[in-house]
Amino acid sequence: MQKTLVIFKPSAMERGCVGQILTRFQQKGLIISGLKMMRLDEAILREHYSHLVEKPFFPILLKTMMASPVIVACLAGVDVINVVRMMTGATNGRDAQPGTIRGDFAMSNQENIIHASSSAEDADAEIRRFFKPEEIFEWPPAYMDFIYSTLEIDE
Ligand code: UDP
Ligand code: MG
Image (cartoon, protein in one colour):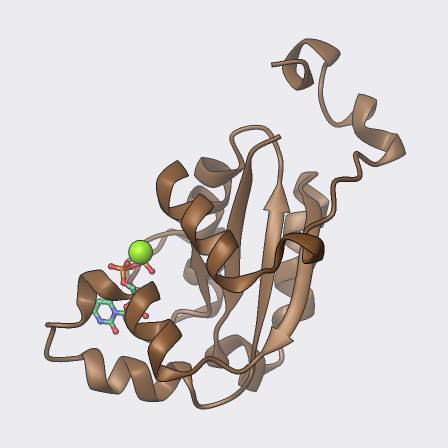
């Protein structure tokens, strides 16, 4: 089953909305395959945000991503990368649709609550960046037949 990476950024940690957001993912029917708390350092952030290192806002982004510990989650589901991106909403919380996580919890382009992988290639690299293989669990829950048709999970 497809997997994606979510980071509960310091904006979620400081504002105490991790539980509410994790509940949304669980309510949707996504499976938690990995979950842990960690501090991010400059080296991992330079790798994770390599597409942004030349941007003028990068030093401030680095600082805010290191402002508190974060929680990283690996979520599993059919088409989960796209589903989680849709649930996350536009980068800028002010542009994000109401009903999305950023639309409901964020007013900022930077302090936007969570990171979510944006492609299959990124998800694969990001899961390996933040989790050891033994920290990812394959455990199709007993209720799977009521989340998907068997035709959907056989793919
Ligand atoms: N970011 C920012 N200012 C910008 C654009 C991005 O501070 O003008 C931060 C923001 O926290 C964003 C992260 O950099 O979530 C990664 O940017 P990306 O374009 O990959 O957006 P995302 O995939 O998070 O929607
Ligand atoms: Mg991105």
